[in-house]
Image 1 (cartoon, rainbow, N blue to C red):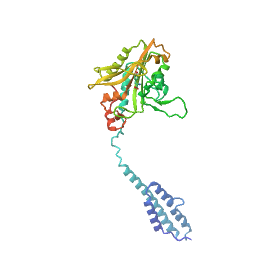
Image 2: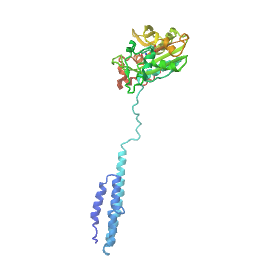
Image 3: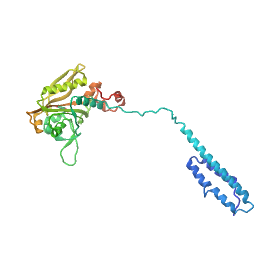
Image 4: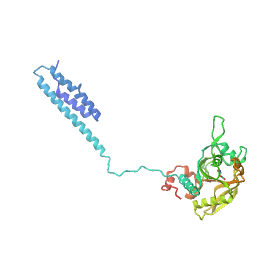
Length: 338
Ligand code: DAH
């Protein structure tokens, strides 16, 4: 065998292939293909042995020179690729100051909830929470609202569809069920608030949302009267809206209190209702196993959205849950400190 190989043609092919190798992996493939143990040029060098003796020195020397030339070309190609990568890197200016990603703010209802909670804590109340999915009996029956009672219509209810016919469940329509749950577990003296979300099957408009936040309050002890209720709630709204705020109590009806009342505040010339309240009904105290001649108390329920609307001058309750960032940005920097 053994025609002498055309080293010039080989070199041209090898250099063209190397120039086409666009990244380090392709360059490595090229090196293995040409200069590796089974590479093309290595094959040529091995073949030198089989050439006629007189031709071996010239071809051998030429092939060795080509090997060195290709090794050099290989090193240069790698360096060129490395340099191109570094140029790309230069587009990142590491001396620029860091940029903070956009940060959210506390939601106005969260701010208001925290502020109300802090105010009640300052007044000596404990804070507990109850379940959002509530049993019918706690949400209604044991608050003296039986199934056939017209008062049920005060709360439009979202029922939980349940396959197995256990006790009926619903999304709580108010935080009042925690009055019963708490009385089951604790002895007087009781002074507690229950912040929580409530849900109603409600047509939404500027003053009604189907989801709302409430604070329930429950105070039970010996010898409490309506005067304690008035003093406590007046003190609360003064801490919230300033000591100059005018308040007004009026009769209202809630099945679980007797007497029941609403508290309104004077706001820009109008009376605005801010909460429902009353003396805890005697039957509820007895139901908890307590002597209603010895223990009395009061309860109240406050809508957080209503308080937030007053504090921030928001006229449409839907703004709170519309997720419009321009609205929510207005509360940046607020943390609920009164
Ligand atoms: N649970 C009532 C509601 O959602 C508010 C309420 C009224 C709570 C009077 C009370 C109360 O504790 O005494 O409309």
